Length: 199
Image: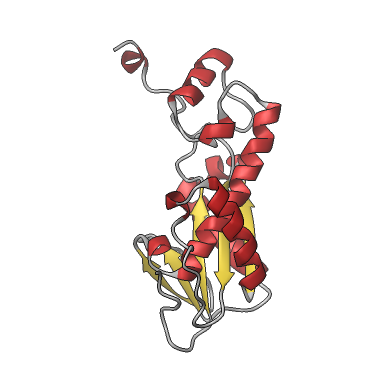
């Protein structure tokens, strides 16, 4: 089972994002404050869970958390400030929205832009180590997936209901056939170089 907290007495918020590697759509971040000593045997890195389990855990996290928030940074801002900065911005926006101020942020990954007035710890693969980060990963992933499912209805042909905007073969085939949508990240390489297409 994952660890319930990093420190014995600080108010901790786990932070994670979803959608960094996608070719389309927003990057979505969540921040979650769980009760000290919180226990949930099912909680894990969202990538290791089925969609059904993520949906179940999202309800549990939202019911059990002392505070949680989810924030979106859209494709246009990603193109303007780059995906790394957009990921940090999404996490900051999520922390901004918490109705309780954390004393420590637990960040999934190895880099973060400091949030003024709150210390942070970067934890590589943190969503598989700490409950609060895993909870944030589940909220970020499920909220983003819902958004992409709605977009798939507006822009069929890219397979977004399955790939959620990630660069799968079906997604790239859709770009070749239909071109880019208004939700594609134009600063990303949407298609491999021509020389690769015909190999």
